[in-house]
Image (tube, rainbow, N blue to C red):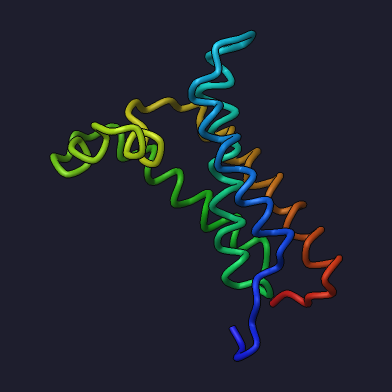
Length: 135
């Protein structure tokens, strides 16, 4: 980040838009409720975190950003197989459950991957429209 670094307003707007949309998926009660509550929210979770990282390092390689978020999300998913006391405590509230999950579901890896792919194209769009070369 250079001295004159300023985050792209479109990226910040998208991040701010993802917050209420992501939270609303956890309370959705209509058609395909289970899929929206669990799987769509996984996709949006990955997109949110990739855009956070991208907003901090806009010239970073999108493969690296998306790969890192996919790996961290996968580690968090795998951690749900163990009951670490600190994680159990964190998962008691809504934010903890939303960030760390509460049940291991192998199919979540697919949705993390879909979120990473979506994020890659979104980041490339933002980089190309802002004429940002990536490393």
